[in-house]
Image (cartoon, rainbow, N blue to C red):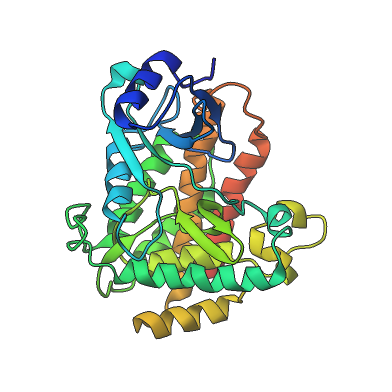
Length: 339
């Protein structure tokens, strides 16, 4: 019995969707997800697939849209952006109590933190970093209309829409006062730069959402926050997660972002490559970095509340105090970049 999976009915659906799959199928929760739940499905021959579904219990209105995420990954199958192959979407809540979709399991590792990243050869780290910014440049060069994603959302006023959306989420999941959240939101609204062009925006573009093997990036994952809008939001977010070794001390290193071990291109290198590839001006990138911290604080608050009310399943080893503290730290970092 795996929490969040109705094994009999899901197995029946998989047999219809994937011609080569052979029962019995073993289901296991893949650790590391803090929003939508991700499971590995392995058949009797050892072939593996991935199933994604919303968190258990309480979910926010319009969040965790499986159809949307499935549509985005499917649309990018033949693009320059590496994504897993999709096998289908189940919109019938009777099958597994919530919609879900299934895609290929891609062999490789996910660099969730520095302890995992330390296992990667230093020469491969540099190659991975260059590939990361190359893929982001290609994503932002992909015309959403050409791949069937032109209706994914409004292309204009991205920052304004995002500020409205995440302010709403912050208010809906707020459990305590964080003055830096309110002040950052005010300044972000006042200093909002003009948007130049519109692209597909991943919304959570970082090494922890990629599968790597050697010096290559094989798949970009977790598209639930993807929309259309200002591409520099992705760049600011990536830079915040691209931590240099000198930014952490030895005690912080094991759980630090993967780039903290060293060997990766620096933030300035990424900016120069992205600017050269896309022709975009990054003069206001600190605004986008601040916006990213603030938005992550709002998202983190939603995660905190879901764990608080038990919506992420049982036996989840999460330090609630640390999660709560992380929200405040993000809000403070946002305000510092705006000051």
